Amino acid sequence: MQEFIQKQTQLTPNYHVTEAIGPDHDKQFTVEVVIEREVLGRGMGKSKKAAEVEAARIAWEKLRCSHGQKGLCMERTQES
Image (cartoon, rainbow, N blue to C red):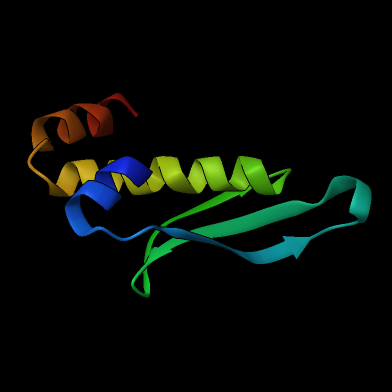
């Protein structure tokens, strides 16, 4: 996802922790991947890294669907 964005826009996506809830031993993080003030994906996880990976996965799906691979997006939606 990051390489795709950099090739298309010469910009680097940024990851922002928007929420961290729960006790220290059982935190749940929410992370957004942002490029030029647009949230491309939002993910949750038990670690910042896991939340970043989920946010990147969601952003990649969104980008892939919006750049001519709609057939693959339709298949993924129907499988879910």
